[in-house]
Image (tube, rainbow, N blue to C red; front, side):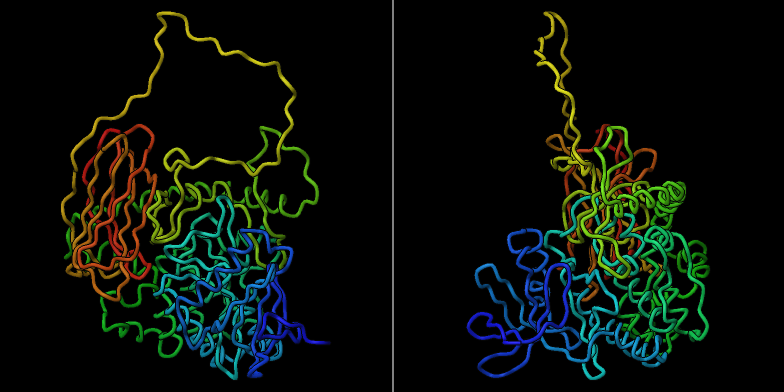
Amino acid sequence: MTPLRLGSRYQLEERMGEGGLGVVWRGSDIVTGAGFAIKLLRPEHARDEAAVARFMRERTVLLRFRHPNVVALHDMIVEGDRLALVMDLVADGDLAAHRQRCGGTLDPSEATELMAQVCNALATAHAAGIVHRDLKPANILLDSGRVRLTDFGIAQIAGEPSLTSEGVFLGTLHYLAPEVIQGDEPTPACDCYAVGVTLYELLAGDLPFTGQAAAVMHGHLYLTPERPEGIPDSSWRLIAACLDKDPRRRPNATELELALRTDPWRAISSVGGDTSDSLPWTDPAAVWEQENTGPGVLAADPVTVESRVPRRRRNRGRLAFGALAMLAAVAVIALAVSRSLGPAHPAAAPAVTVTEQVTPGGTVALGRIPGADLGGPSPQPGSTAPASTHPGTPPGHTLRPSPESTGATATSSAPPTTAPASPPVTATPPASGTPTATPTTPADTPWQCGTVAAATMSGSGKATGQTLQACIRIGDGKLDLRGTLNGTKAGWHEQIILVLEDSSQHNDGSYTSPVCIASACTFSTSLVPSSGEWTVLPEWAKAGNFQSSGNEPGYVDF
C-alpha cells in the first residue's frame, strides 16, 4: 500500500493492531528513516471528550516516568481531527502471542524472568503514583527477550481526575482484582493481582477463572483457583499470594520482582534493608496469629492494637452481602448482553451502565455490583475528596459518600421513562400560624484529638518510631477531620487514611491523603454527613499498603 503521511515528518506504512479507541500503525520518520509504532485515535472519537481524555492519559503517563521495560513516547501529533502518539516500535509481538507460539505454556524460568521485568516496571510506575490498571499478556510486548510494558490508556494517576464514571469500572475482566469489581478505585495492589493472573496463565496455559462474565466475576470475588499440574511450589505460592482477596495481604511490585528473581521465602527481608515487615503474604494463618497474639504486637502500644478490633469486626459484615452480590452480578451481565431494553420501570432493579461490550479477553467498563460492597467507587489515591470505604482496604480503595456530602448531583443510568402528562400544580403556602420546619446548623466545637499512637508494621507489629494522631471537630456546619503522621521516611511513600465511624462503629467513609513529602505530615478534609455521633480512626499506609491504626478522639454530635 502507499504510505500515508502524518504531519510533516511521519508516514504510516502498515496496520499492526487496533483497539476500541485507536489503531496502531507501523510508521517511520521521513527524515531519519527510524521506525516507530504510531497510535492514531479513531476519527469517530475525535470529538468525544472522554475518549480523547483516555487517549491522552497514555501520553501523560509516559511523560511522567521512563523505564527500560516501558515503551517510550517520542512525539505527539495533532493535525486537524487526527491525534497520534509516536512510540517505540517493538517488533517481536506481545506475550500472549509468544505463549501461543510456545505451545500454550512457558517454561517456569522464562515466565518468572519475564514477569520479574514487568514487576520492575510496575514498581517504578507505582512509586510515581501510577497504576497501570490493565496489565495482561496482550499489553506486555517483547523486544529480543526484554519486556516492554505498554497501553497505559486507562491508567490511574495520583493527583489526576479519575477516568472512571461513578457506577462503572474499567479493565479486562479476566485480570480484574476483586476490589475493583466491588467498586473500589484501583491501587497498586490491583496490578499485583493481575501479575498473579498473568503468571498463572503463562504456566498453566489457561486463566484461573473462565466461563461467562458472571462466573468470572464470581471467581474473582469468592473462589480460590486449584493448582494446575506442573507449576513449581515457589511459583504457586507466589501466585496464591497475588490472588489474595484482601489487597493488603498481596506482595507489592518490588517484593514480587525480588521473589521472582531469587528464593521468594528468604528474599523479601532484604528489600530496603528492612526486615520488620518481611513476608507479610506467605502464610495467612501465621499472619493472623502474629497480628493478634504475637509478641511483636503485645510489645507495641496496646491502644493501637485494640483500635484495630472494630475494623476487623466490621469486615466480617461484608460476608452477608455475598449472595446479593452474585445475584447482582448476573443482573449486570444480563443488562450487558441484552440487545434491546424496554423502558425501565420505577421499581426495577438498580440500573447499570455498560460502556463497552463484554467479550472474552476484552476491556470492559461494567457497572459495579450492587451489594458487593458497603458503598460505591471512590476518588483516586491522593485525592482529598470525601469518600467511604469498606473495612480493611488499603489507601485508595475508597468508596464515594452520598452526593449530599460532596455537592455532586446524583444521576441515574436507567433508561428514561415517559410519564403521563399531569395537570399543573400550584403550591399553596402554609396557613398562618402553622410552624415551618427550618434546617438547623450544628454548633461549632473545638478540635477534639485522640492520644498519640505509635505507628507499627503490619504483620510484625514492630514500632517504626513514627506517631499517628487524629482529630475531629464541627466548624461552619461541616465535620472537619484531621490526621497527623510524624517521622515519615523518604522512599516509603506514606499516606494517612482517615476513616469516619458512627457510634455503632459502622465505617461510613475513608479519606486518603496524597503521599507525604514532609517529616511531619498533616492531612485534613471536611464533609457533611447525616445527623448522628461521629468519630475518626487514623490509619497509616506505606507504599500503598495498610500498616496500622491509631486512636479515635471520641465522638462529636453532628
